[in-house]
Amino acid sequence: MLRIFSNLFDSLGPKTPTTTGQTEREHTLQVATAVLLIEVARADGQINDDEQRVVEAALRTRFTLTEDELADLFELARHKSEHTHDLYSFTARLNTELDEAERIHIFEMLWSAAYADGHADAHEAHLLRRLADLLHLRHADAIGAKLRAEAASRQ
Image (cartoon, rainbow, N blue to C red; front, top):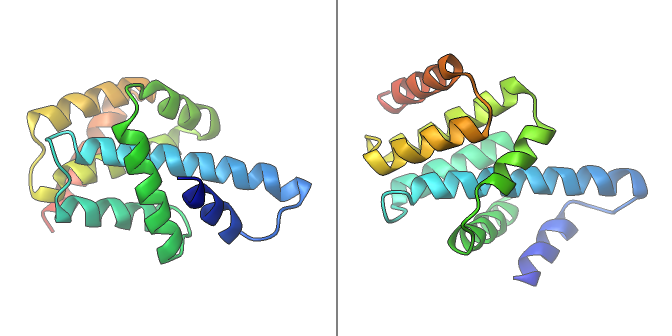
């Protein structure tokens, strides 16, 4: 576990007082986003190959990560997801650090993870309704994100 943290931090380059805070902020956002994506992907009981590919693609698109960094982040987030019962700490960080448009974008990514296997089941939909509230999204914005993710999954 410590190796994962160490590798992720080391891979982001030399640390200076100015970049350390930014690096820690970025890492926190990466972990929070990854945990939520994994929570959605495993809401139906397991993470299948399609869901894992969508989660990894979303993380790769949202953050500039090497394949090793992505693998470490995915493993760290999976571990946190399996050992936490509190989504608030992750959504609170996103609420603090991101503006509304960025939170809507993250929420659309979450819906994409739900639709990775072709449909969103009841457990995924329930979790996403909770996450919309925790991310302080307006209903119209949450529905818009869902519809965009659903349309993208059909292409």
